[in-house]
Length: 71
Image 1 (cartoon, rainbow, N blue to C red):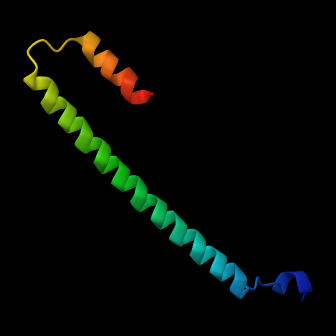
Image 2: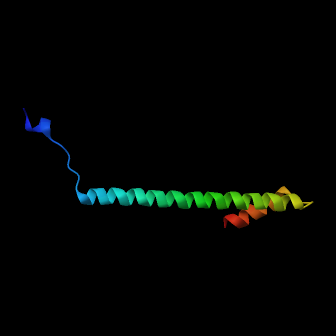
């Protein structure tokens, strides 16, 4: 039997800790992204409702608002 055939990978406590931290960070980031997504959806809905109340809401006004929000 060859020594290379029986090699096994050992995991150190530092590697386990790093992996746990990675998972925790990914979960935290995912929660934050979901929160931001919900906020964006809320504000889009608010904008749609506001737009529907304006009688003379034009595409020019829409573009001006979008440019202002993006800057």
